[in-house]
Amino acid sequence: MPKRVALIAMVVPLLWASAGYSEGADGDAKGPRRIDKMDFGKTADGTPVELYVLKNGKMTAKVITYGAIITELHVPDAKGKTTDVVLGFDHLEGYLAGHPYFGAAVGRVANRVAKGKFTLDGKEYSLAVNNGANSLHGGLKGFDKVVWKAEEVANPAGPSLKLTYVSKDGEEGYPGNLTATVTYTVTEDDALRIDYSATTDKATPINLTNHSYFNLGGPASGNILGHELFLTADKYTPADANLIPTGEIKPVQGTPFDFTSSTPIGARFSQLKDDPIGYDLNYVLPAGGKEPTLAARVHDPESGRILEVLTTEPGIQFYTGNFLDGTLKGKGGVVYKKHQAFCLEAQHFPDSINQPNFPSTVLKPGETYTQTTVYRFLAR
Image (tube, rainbow, N blue to C red; front, side, top):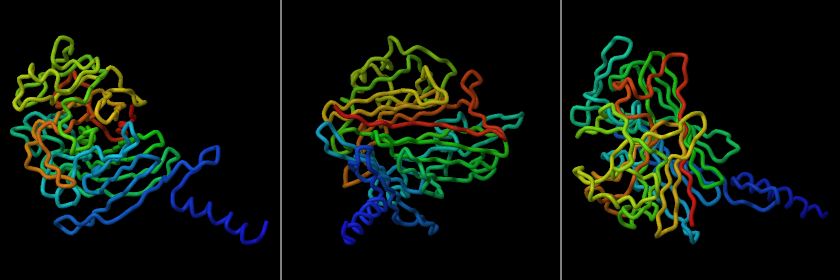
């Protein structure tokens, strides 16, 4: 082989590797598999915020260190056209100005804690109250409003980003110094895998989740009432007018909450008594353990996109964007209106720390909290 040809043969694979490309067993390139990093502005106190772009095959996820927020998620439809399917903002200012947890990592305790109080090991704790008389999604400054430390991690499954935050003892009223991590991985089968972990030096409740708002047709496509939802859950936890569980666990059969067969999200709105109308309900999953198990499947007949949610958690909160009211203007100038997106938040049940018959959310020193949720995309 001539020297010049041999040199090219050596250099090209190196260039491909540095660009993040991978090759299949048959030698054909699968496409880009990479992480890119860039600046995304600064918080009010001058803390820099970074944006990471995770790309693998046909799927791209964008994550910022502020709130560990998923700002964009691009996936193909049935015709191969790729579209961003989550709500959010083009710039950091939108997130800093206040928003309903678009794409954020939520904690220390997701969902509601009744009256912002709980008793643990004989001591009563008072939390920051930010939802009427209750504490919601970690309080006034939960995990969605802090800057996480990011690092790229080697993962054979795909581009992987680990974010870490240390929540100090007493933060928002919670006991213990807690170290939490959220790891986002984009896999070759068009899935975003989210792995959570946490440790503490004092017993504390913990319940982490992701609060992405999905519209499988793209946020500019209108509402999600025609999306078809299937849930593996045949039970739910009834709640009062303030969305605090009563402590009961009831079957969904015969109620407008039954999605055990695929049903358009808006099909039973006329049977609901909520104000505003829509779903904001915790479902009890039949599985939950060490391996992620199918919890939900959503199909958009217009685009053909399908979202499957797999999780290790015992519950999933289904929310239909009831409080989006047209006051927020998002990416590309799109105005976010009622029912323009849905959320499927895999987590423990709301107010579990005050409900002895619910699965425990208490993490003790020497233990490690773990949670895995996978958002997998298909099209037909």
